[in-house]
Length: 242
Image (cartoon, rainbow, N blue to C red):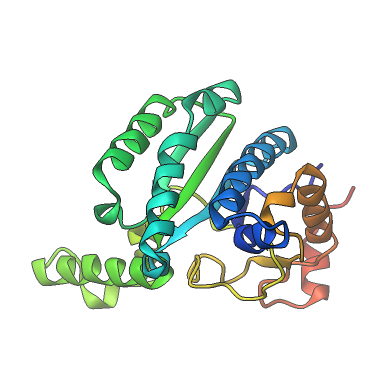
C-alpha cells in the first residue's frame, strides 16, 4: 500500500467484443462497461488512488456508425449519475473537445462537474471526444498565440511550458496506464503525459475488469523499477534507508 500510483489512466477496450461473444448488441456491451466503471471507481477510492483517467470516447470514435455514436452519447447522459460520485466523495473532470458534444449531454456533464467540485477523495477524469494529437495541437496554438502577443518568448518555451497548456495541467502524469481487451497500443491517448508511465496490457474485456483485475495491475506496477533514464545503481543510491 506504500506504492500505490497517484494517477492511473485506463483505455477501456473490449465492450463490443464482449457483447459479440454473448450474442448481444454492441450497445449492451457499452452498458455493461458502465457498471465496470462504477466498480473500478469504488475500488480505486479504497486503494487511495487520487486520479483515475478513463478514455471514454476518442475523436476518432466520431467516425463510427451514427447510430452507435448516438447510443454512446445517450449512455453518457443516462449513466453519469451524480450520486455515485457523491457517495464516494469523488470529483468529476472532463478533458477533450467539448465543442462536439451534443448540448444536452454537455449540460449534464457540466452540472455533475460543478456539483462534485468540492469532493476530495479522488478525481475521475473522463477523456471525452479526446485525442492526444488534438490536445498537443491545441497546446501549440495557445503557445503560438502567446508568442505572437509578446507575452512568451520562443527561447522561454520548455517542457513545462507545453505541460501547462495541456488539458491535463491540473493533475500529475499517470504512473500507470492500463489497457484492457488484449490490444497493445496507446491509440492516441495521453501520449505526452505517458512518456514515462508504466504500461500494463491485459486480455480481459473491459466489462469483466473488476477490483481484482485492478489490484493485479497495480501489483505488477509495484514489481517494476522506475528509472527515468537512470541506472539501477543510481536509483538504489537515492533510496532512503529503512
